[in-house]
Length: 337
Image: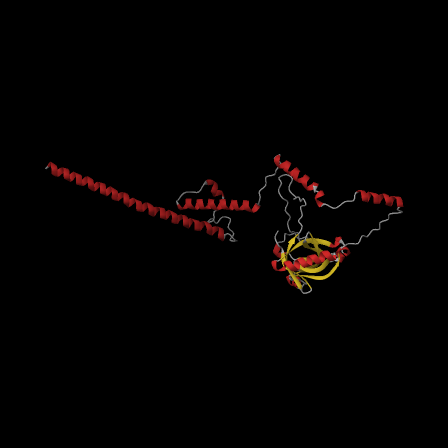
């Protein structure tokens, strides 16, 4: 696990430096919305409901909708004035009996691991909570917002559980009418409870829905029922751009040698052509082939120089051969005389 927060638990004059870890993770099955025909993912655009235009991220702000449907837009200055805190303190407010806190208030759970310097006070706090059968009600700043939480002990580890605010727990707006309940019915209900009584073991329960989905997907994969889709639109675009750049380089090199590009290449507008140029953003596209052409010319010039250096060497060898023949003829003439 990776620590997501560091701070200290403080109660009285005692401070316990700790690390915070997420204690739970969701294994719920999730599906993506796709095109049934080819398996492509369905994308959503950020479209304004007023003008119907797509809105870039740079123009998106936070808005608060009032009860009558009016929208109040908040900018960065407004948000900076809201109360926020970056405190690294888990402040114990009080220790309360465990049965006084309704489990409905519990939200997210985190494990607290002590730093090396806080191992002893951590153990003392853990033991005190166990022996008193109490929970520590604390305030803590997570994601720059102060929230209420409790500290309790689970398997020798102190757990921090954030809590919902009281007004976030809804009150049922209906009445339960049970009618008259007879003593015999109550007795039978108690007997049923005793019959099914036992200790809670979470390993006895399994997520059969997730297992069924995994088995179904595996069977479809083995049966070849898979839609082959591009992993990323961006990467396929980069490949196309690379191929186009390579083709332009080849064409530039051929032009430098005085060769004509392929007939199929003439269908695409070249960088040094005036056709279709409106002067908006095309300068960069026009400059690239020019640079590559210059590089190609340089390469061609270097090739010519290399050829020029080799040519004199051949001529020199030819001169040496002619000189030897002339010397041989002269020697033969002297012997004859």
